[in-house]
Image (cartoon, rainbow, N blue to C red; front, side, top):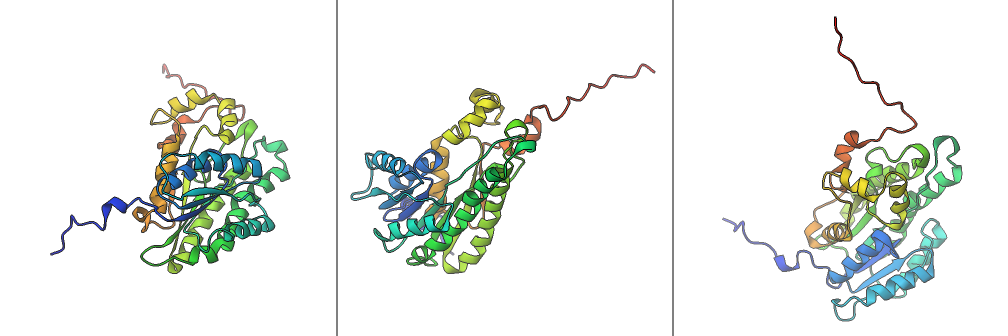
Length: 298
């Protein structure tokens, strides 16, 4: 009878020693949190991409100053605009100058636009769709040869898509409605499921993470306009907003041997808030507050 307590080298279960990762939108926020986690989990190279070269260089300097990295491990700046085919081609060319393979892709670059229904612009919708959906597909498609290079059944490569709980539930409405963002994140999640089945036989796993509110630069403005960080934290079932450790743990899990059998999943990182959404919606100028019923005296 097999020993059910036996595990295959448990100490290495969450290790990423020697792995090579590419992160789009990696110069700040959740992408930078994830980059720090991947490096500290053992990655030998982590490529940091965003549109602004200076932002990439700042992020790389911070990451390479981390105290507990593997010998020779480093972050490398590869600035590129992931919303266009030409930009993704540039990203791939830069990465290929430093490595012959990639083990992990975190498609994290994202854009949002908040404006009321009546004046929501076509440009805002297009911006979200171009980066949050088309950019994800092009990034995975054009990095595929590098992802496939070392992928095996025993050690598959990984794609992780940063989506959002806004792609699973209703996003922000009213004065700062994020129609394009919510639609694009729903599309990104479904794209991830399609890619998961397409690429699984090629030894590549594809999953999405769906963060709720984290106080990043992108989210802070909306958080402040809709009541402030303390209000949103108090409304969460856990009593807090997301922190960098929450992203770090999820990304390392999905990228490591621990997550090798996970495929096509959309992992919610929101403290359970999405399931409590109906209780937390605030009355806005869109809907009049219902009048309280009075008991009949008859």
